[in-house]
Length: 325
Image 1 (tube, rainbow, N blue to C red):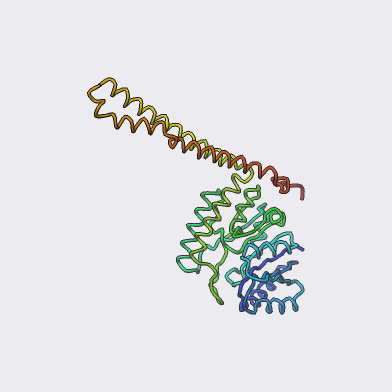
Image 2: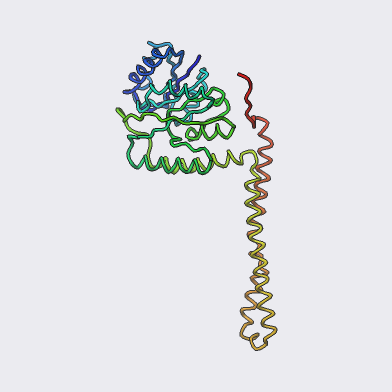
């Protein structure tokens, strides 16, 4: 099997037959040996009935149906598990991705890249989706170093071995190029045509931006500190401890200065006694050492995280290798 197409979908019954026809036209024109895997993410319309009909007429088509809506990441993972092709291309079922882009994706992959992400340079989405997407893509590039114009584009091409090392859950499908780059794979992008939606409605809203930001923080931590959490928690703990010790020393020095100044000038002692007592009590107060205790807690959290990683790392390969083809 040379090529696998994975198409996750939710309530897209109107577009499936047309999408299948477009894919078949590209396959026949380029003589592709391919399979098409439709993953129904718990649709409530007639999407699955349509998939069954298409599969009955075309042996290259297969389907996976979820019992309920589990999300796009789960749908993609199910499709990846079923795919057998050397290359795996994902595209959305809403006809906004054009199957005619497939040959160019494969040509770019032959230049040595492992992941090629689509870039919808000209988009036909609502303006707030476009602005939010650009801000989100900028944050991903800044925090992870993987600078792509459109991380969220549904049309991407992968080598099989990339998907064997990347596990998806939650909303991690947006970050497959980041996860692949973290394991040493080469990531690129390609400008793709973005067609306006013909059927149904968009599944994306403003809430996706905030959820995506939280997921970005998780991915940033996992890709940089997932196998060495003490480097993060320990550094943070040492900084907090240093700030706490410095603040405590300054407060003690301030108390000594006030007391010595009052002793040198007895006429000020009577008026300054209350202030001196307050400063001295603050200097020796255990609350001044609170930052030090917080820092120690961060160090302890880092140690516990290291113990957890050391016990679980044996079950997961922590490196990626490249052999002869």
